[in-house]
Length: 110
Image 1: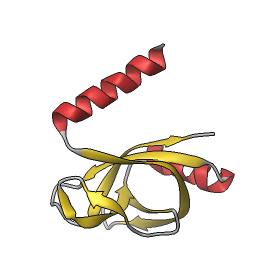
Image 2: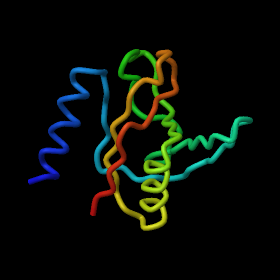
Image 3: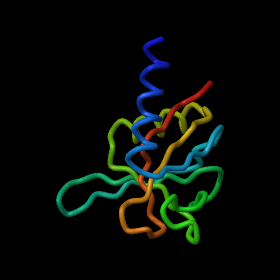
Image 4: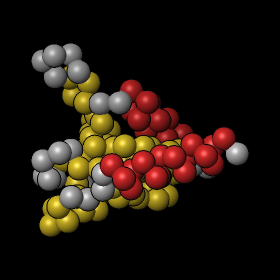
């Protein structure tokens, strides 16, 4: 019950705050890790054998590259890749309506 309420809160807050899209039952095909000059780690996630996924939620004329600097998303994606598990991914525009999109939630499924 708590999980259901948690996901309902996430979904409701996302509808109010920002446009987002999702991909279901996807496979993480590769991950590339980049360290920036300020020691931030950014991870580029390739899904279903492609570096791009669906349209940008705020600019449908471009497709997205999925990026994250969240340690939780990074570790979940790595676990899915290593365990050959499917994932559900919710993503949002990075803020500039370009081809870079931010992974908001990455859920490892069975």
